[in-house]
Length: 214
Image 1: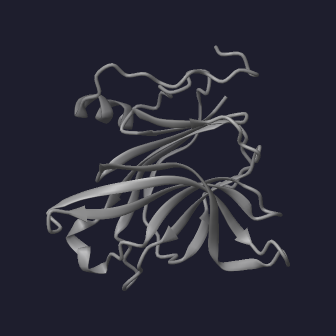
Image 2: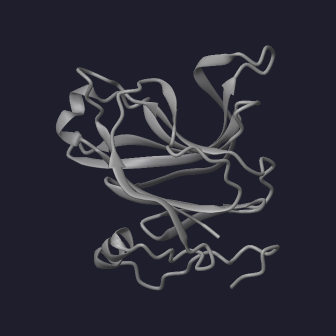
């Protein structure tokens, strides 16, 4: 067990295979930070028609240290409904009073005349309330770009590990990067569904979501 005041090192997988990803997707074990062994949410799968809204993950809890893993899958059969400026953000440490938090944001992009579908990602600060009045915003604002822009497959298994002021991000078991100066210490989990909703259809799904805490 890692000391509570010292973050565990990033997960290092020598050889990542589709079979290994599938095993980790289906297990209830936290392979990223073993001392976070309490599975408190999941596995659960869902879509949303809350276009343009930040939707809190139920049950609502203020979390400091946690591991979140989920599979994100765009419905490429409905490409005509997708605007490539749209995204899904995994929001975490969202402070209900200030409206500030972090978001692990994913966007779909296409190559080779829409025959190959990839996703780009980034980590940002998210603001859901006006910094002047404190009133809720109709759409969130983003700033403080930290990491991102590599291209990954669709679907993709993504993971956030939060340990104190250290944040780690993964895609398909690959460590994407680490932030060591996080200033927001705790808050709620949520989804930033900036995706087109047509006839209550959402072209992106969250599957096999799990959340662990120490």
